[in-house]
Length: 253
Image (tube, rainbow, N blue to C red; front, side):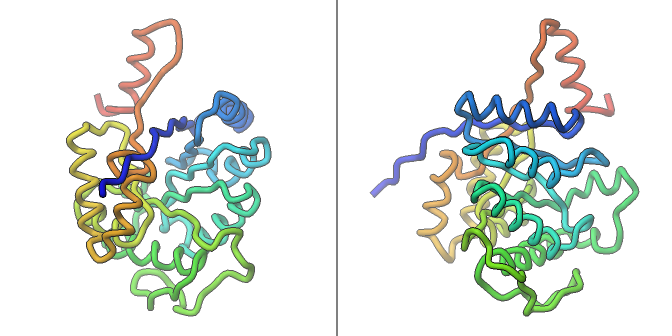
């Protein structure tokens, strides 16, 4: 029996380059317009995403709050778990946590270290540690991060299963995401063909649990991903809009 795909869910991805008050106002507008989610980023040395997300949670009541993304090199996986579980409680269970290695950002800032030389192993371990803390399960014996397999939160999470998404672009990370995470978040410029390929890699990583991956494939989009981002600039001057897009999409040009 073929499962019908879920309805397309539309959300808005906001910037951490604007004042917090403006981000909150945009999130409130998104909720009033009936959008499903506001995605909040953390990039370079911009505004800290958990602080911004807490403000959005306090000023909205239905809007999903997507964290996309945080990396386990800036914050230890146990700290990410603590902050995510706290924010999920504060928002009444509206959080979707996104994590990624963020190698390009860390290298550009000169903040990469020995741990970032093993990104696949580090992300696999980080997801497992966070999952064990915010949901049921035992953490792995660490190889990258300092942690104990018995680590846990000192409070009961608001939900027994907090959704975790991985920012993934290569085949191995997509497959690991299929095995360990609830989905993936692709980059902003992603073709339909690349999206289909990514969904296939996610499914391949979850071959041990086909029923689970089938449900996951239809939960968010027909492609089986949390979503694909598209860039927009709103304003009266198309030429200026293209300049702003080019600055973000291809900053080296």
